[in-house]
Amino acid sequence: MTDLVEDKLRNYFIQKKFKAGDTIPKEVELAASLNVSRSIVREALSRLKMLGMIESRKRRGMILTEPDIWSGFTKIIDSKLLSEHSLKELLELRLVIEMGVSELLFIRRNDADLEALEKVVVTEEKNAKTPADHARYDVEFHKILYHMSGNETLYRFQKMLGYVFNYIVGAMSTVNEKDRAVSVSHRDLLNILKNGDPRAFQEAMHKHLEPYYRFLL
Image (cartoon, rainbow, N blue to C red; front, top):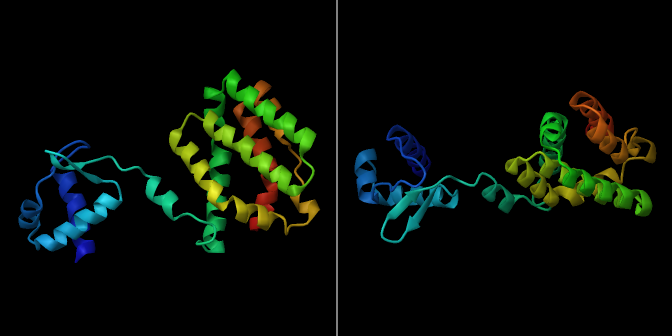
């Protein structure tokens, strides 16, 4: 019943054209409108509060809010709690995003981001000795790419991936050296970002990510 009322509340807010910042009716009014008990409405509202869709304000009562789409997700993401299947699907989602972000990078690239990428590449070329080292610099390099996209949602997704980083590093360490090898390096990607075009970057990115595709297949 609470699941049903939760859905009814969502539809009610939509039908009544409530917007973020609007005060919603009191529990007793909602119970009457939905023809359910007040206790069930209270429980359903509590769920919506946990999702960040409602919050209580002094002197205003309950306010409809724009939910933070990642806050709940990041609270439950932990490589020790997720199955290997779920972790692989998160890795697949990363691959899909990074293959599709090329246009945004070329529209929004700037000197500061390119300099930050250059710093990572130089440090990697100088210091990376082991697969774990390269994996760490890979995270740093791609973190800047997400930031360069100018899309806060994408950047927060990348930060969330930190929770599955240990899984990815551990899983890739089981892959033989030949299959871990990349034909396109971070240096190659950076050079294309500086002097190439989105299509060339996308093709190069696909080659750069090939070890992950081989691992997933």
